[in-house]
Length: 353
Image (cartoon, rainbow, N blue to C red):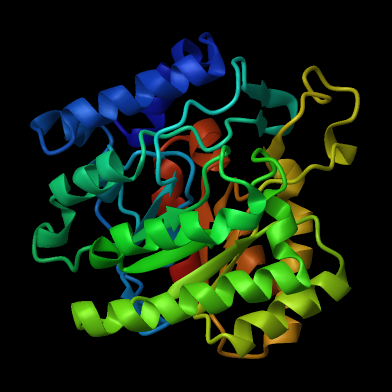
């Protein structure tokens, strides 16, 4: 039975559950079955379409966005689905429960989600232990292993003026285990976090992060690329400021974009006015707009990972047309299932052929 057929059978059950419960059930199943014969239910051969960005060789152009596997429990399961790269987190130094439930809402009419999870995670020590248990780096069947991105943030209880301390603690912890590290300043669900995208705050944060990276490079004998994850709710002037900061501090790439606060595309639908970040189809055009603006501001050759509203291979092609080099999915895999990974990878390989 095909992956799409299997997911077609499972989806009515999962969508009959509360959205967060369905998420927990799915991750629990993946954690229990990865690296066992049962993984064949969702495994797919990895499409070979290598591309080099930030000094890293990505086996193909489709990745998993951060947020789906916050505690890095299911790295090997996602590797089996054929992703070229997987990003896990966001992790914070200390464990935290996140915001009160309910905090995930489906908007199926628009293939969308609203979440206000709030960086709920088990903390840095548990996260790193899970990363260390993953086996994917050995590769499978002679294939090059996928790449792993580790996404870092701040605890909700940490005052915004001390946010840099949290990012540095996380960077120290994840650095030896990451192919690349993502500095997440764009979640709408941690109070004041997006203020770190402003000019002076971003300058101070990136200066400290890059300085610490130099010390970690000397300590570990390898330079790990650093990406910044930004919001889609930026105007062109803000994009110019962030792009200049990325160049000025020697950052290696940008991920565009996180979820949106806008509700224009879902006005009138059930749950549309819930607070939190909106993802899925409604964020597609805003993400593409910001990607195009960053490409114009950053110039050719600066790595951009495009994410937001990718529900098909054609949507992924549009991300590359806007200026992205590779893409990530999250909400798309919830609505379409793991067969979407191969569909996108094949579509992007054909585009580059």
